Image 1 (tube, rainbow, N blue to C red):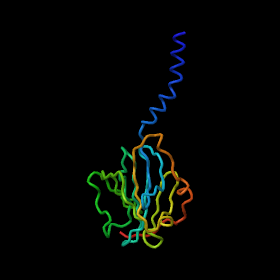
Image 2 (cartoon, rainbow, N blue to C red):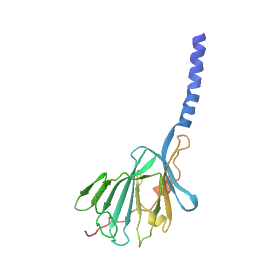
Image 3 (tube, rainbow, N blue to C red):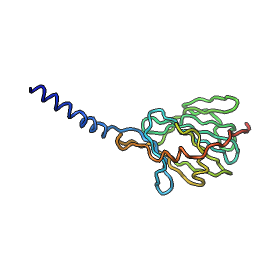
Length: 186
């Protein structure tokens, strides 16, 4: 009878113990924050989660893509893709990275730069034409949603219970359809 009561006690306490462990289990959370600290989007992410920004360089008028990955509670610069190396764009491989020329893109990988957060300025349909590629939403036209705004891209650690999807409808319904950007000189 004593073993039965101990077993019953254990079975009843397991859900409580699980919830207590989940409350303290910290996960990486990707956030987009707008002007005035307004939370635009939030989602728990796994290690290696990819986030890519794309814009038209203001002088070269060629596309630039910056790809970031989440690891260790930080956004790491994974690679930058450019079609020109003029007007302040990269021209040499990073010290801790490599350079790849595909003919269409010049790719700079590595460099060991990371941030907990960074500012992302959004242009408009004339300057910048900023787009964001965020899994699983695909490429979205942020220049149509947040023209002229400064967004904060952030990775935070928070308990699993607090980490939830927030306002995913903004990205699901965000405009798409800007054709692939052509051109660029070397």
